[in-house]
Image 1 (cartoon, rainbow, N blue to C red):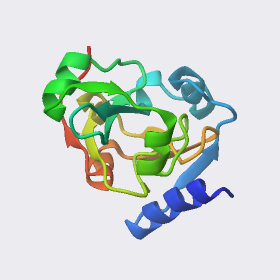
Image 2: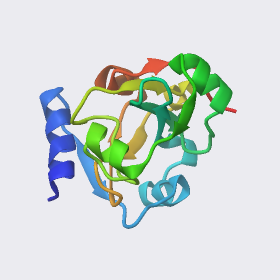
Image 3: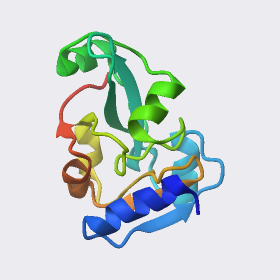
Length: 155
């Protein structure tokens, strides 16, 4: 088990959850992850990270798999212009590689926002620290676990 996967698993356990972690193969897209989990694509919580142009910090947007982040709305929420986060910034702030960024278990605190579309389901799935693993949880638990603020930032 990779260090990243162990860190996500432990973060969930520490929060009082018994995580159901599933190997989803090389699920690089929300559609592929949804197929592996046998769920609707919007039940996949995508972790989209931008770099704050003023702060230089990574900012996390947890969005439903079929949604896209609106750059203008996201910038307004973040209170600063947003740019592309590179792999080094993502790895240094979250501890995860691109494609496996989990909403929990980050190495450092991260500002996060949550797409309200995810709250419409009984169960959702998110990356578990690797590009090959996902975990399930109730959507109402995602905000408190990740520290994400529910907000409208999609197109």
